Length: 229
Figure 1 (cartoon, rainbow, N blue to C red):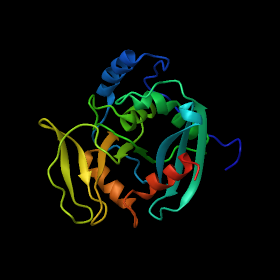
Figure 2: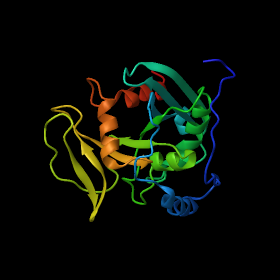
Figure 3: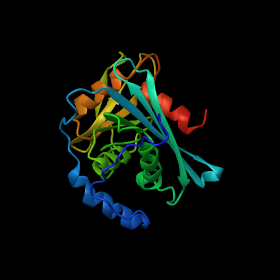
Figure 4: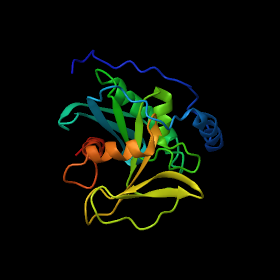
């Protein structure tokens, strides 16, 4: 990647980031109406990217990483890491306000925006249906998927043991995600659409990015970069 080759990020529905938790909740409630839960993907998806965030210096630094993989080979073709000062406290349900500024900075360091972003976190499987994958997707008006290792909200029945099996994650009568077993004999992960995909398509893309590990290759590689491994 050339040092001066950077992606242009068109930000939609821009808002302030220096806000209180109460103001952040209000922003989520306002922006969630822009989430699109139908397939609006590029005609051809040639790159998929994992997005992950870690913290350093006792939480004072936010380190965001993006690992871009060619699809369908899943070979890494680009990477970007950005570190910014942490400006928002840790509040469950408001992690996007703590993490997205660093993610945007990392995305700017790529030659172009990847076709599909798989975020380490929730999409609509969130109390206000606006986790980090949905927030990022709406800001960029770009396809995003939430891939989480744990459940934030909702309930589900037993997940069949076979690879690729899943059951709905429900919050009341609403289906907000999928509890997906990516490999036989391992604990399932929690997948939810972020923006510009339906649930079934989100699950299909996550499985298409799975190799021999529990987590999709996008998430695995981004986590290693974010953790400085």
